Picture (cartoon, rainbow, N blue to C red):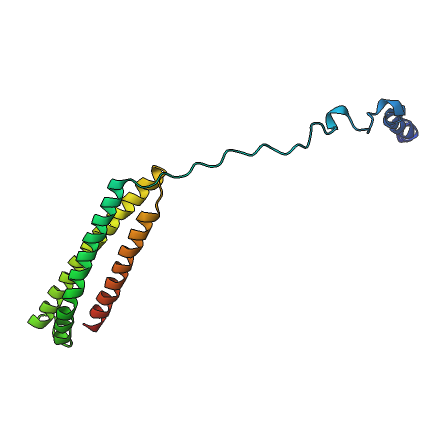
Length: 169
């Protein structure tokens, strides 16, 4: 029985191969189709309208910037005026016990400097709010950025002095 199946095996295998041997005219052409052809022109695109320019700062904004710069400057001057007395208090408290009056006086003097620095930092916070408002309103920010840079420089100077005095205590 086995030999009957083996005799018909080659015949059975040729049936699927016959399906592959169809005529050449049944396959699609590999030529370029109309949809694959490039159409249109290569004309240069029309220039776009120039981008909108930010609005210049208003007079009240400039007045507010002057006020904030003045407030920060006066707080910075008060800070600088308090530094010599704080240095003296820190030198006197160097090596003193934490519960001593000299140490407490130095801490109070440092806290006084911190309060002057906080007044400058408040002006910086107001400048940050003005900058964010100017960005959202699509206004020029250069005047705000310049004032903010000046106030940031003041804070950096004050931070350096405070760090120096705290490390000396």
